[in-house]
Length: 193
Length: 193
DNA sequence: ATCAATTTTCAATTATTTTTGAAAATTCTA
DNA sequence: TAGAATTTTCAAAAATAATTGAAAATTGAT
Image 1 (spheres, rainbow over the protein chains, first blue to last red):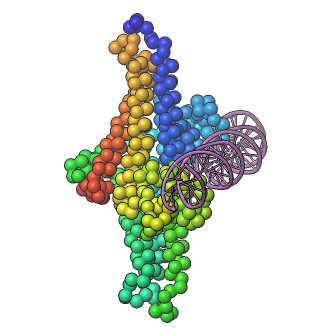
Image 2 (tube, chains in turn cyan, green, red, brown):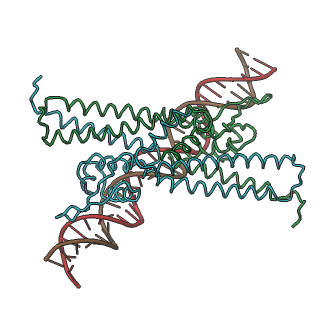
Image 3 (cartoon, chains in turn green, red, orange, yellow):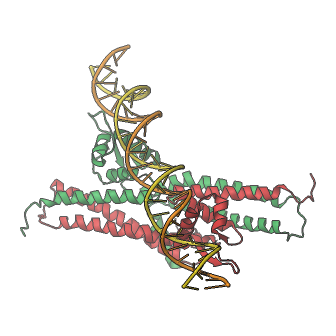
């Protein structure tokens, strides 16, 4: 095998590897409730060395202009891509966060805001709703079946609420701890458990 | 307001609160790529004091027999519900894990098996694919653009791989640490960061 | 202000996921 | 083993989510 040939496969194989990564990213994301095209677009930007414009995305991912536009805007909304202006070109260019840990923290922040916080709010609403029954019009002697059911339900809600609060607190730590927060946490956990 | 009346609202309000919880659980789950009915069924079992059978689920959630059957089996597959036999009744009954932390660890274990491990495997495949180019047929004097692209890509893959390996290791810790592992991790992280 | 380039929007279409329901399979009882 | 009760299966239907594409809006240069 000739050692000095500028391997003609290289380009093709790099491309294949990138393609695989993009596809993988899309599949993973869709398992986690994120639209496939959004994740593929993100992967494409992540892998690209220079910023890309809408047409680049359309061509490489074979999607419509509308889709590319919506998707890119969504990535901006999530805070994992940013606009870049290429001088001498009127088109908008986009680039993705390159630091994997920053990316992770951004995603965590967004999902916390979009899901954990509303979840907690609604759980508290449930709890108030059922709690307000408990203390009303009941005698001390507590073992009528209805009260028992109520108590059991309230316990479960409380467990769930403190669990979610725990997750929430943990997310805060991770989000704010600079650098490799998880790594730290894992090490500490390893020692402790 | 009469203090001693066995409040006639109580039943209704408890029911409403449970209903809200079930709905909430379903919505949350579907944000995370889990079928709504599956989560609702889980919530129902979680809230129920005694095990339920397929007909109970069908009635309470207003779904077909087929759906209830599939869903219950899926919950068994996930390991977050178990079969129970009610003596004197031929029907199968189901109950959900009641310990929220155990539930969490079970879900973590499953998602790790179903997603993190395949992800890692495929990432390594990508890496091998692109790595095999790098070392082939290139001279030391490395700055031709193709090699540079390759290097950049490999760096990104490596970052991603070590990130996912980190997550994987962390999941292992959490899964195995008995009891409130996350709580522990959060506390430690709080001290350390 | 005008106009061409570019981006955004959104109703209609297409793709994907979930659910249904009844037939087939299984299980339990006698 | 027969037969009723129960569960499972899966093709078809329904529901949901994502994408398209062309019209409308916006932008930036002159």
